[in-house]
Image 1 (tube, helix red, strand yellow):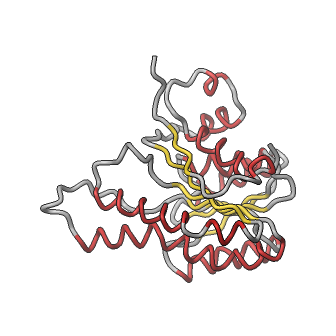
Image 2 (image 1 turned 90 degrees about the horizontal axis):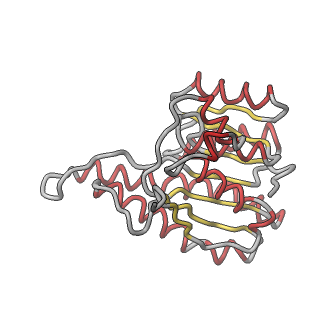
Length: 246
């Protein structure tokens, strides 16, 4: 797999979970990466410093991708730095409100719905013109495992809406050389520290001996979809199981 000379934007990539591992893995595969964060400035700085210290290329951009202005800021900075964006991974979305249906808050539920689909709508509109012009692009969204729904109704609805929004867009984008795919994990644990994330990215002992799905598993799937090896995969929903059956 290789993403050499590509530029990737990964939303929510300064936390302790999937986003950071996705950013590290795309850099490992040769891409320059825009590390997006909302509040985790110090963690974003740590990720960028590690990448640059190991020969990679990355910048950190604070932006709220749940709103139009935030998405515009993110892509504007990316264009100024790299002149293009080839890959966009849409990671965070709905909040976590596990409430029974008879007492759930419709206002919060609607906010969850917007937070799931707004990043895809805004970023797709900003990025597709350039991708169409180059006849090359990758859009990947994190959704939800199709048979392992969470106990949070509004979270499930939001993830389903994101998945459907992406699925309804892939055929038109495919005609212009752009693939749109969804990664659909069940529960995914966070790493305890940055060192552990690096060890998994480098396929060290911790990665080889893992018993449950790791953020790195998600990152490897996305790296494949974003490489030339994934050129003929679009409209897919790739599920990840939580643990191995023994």
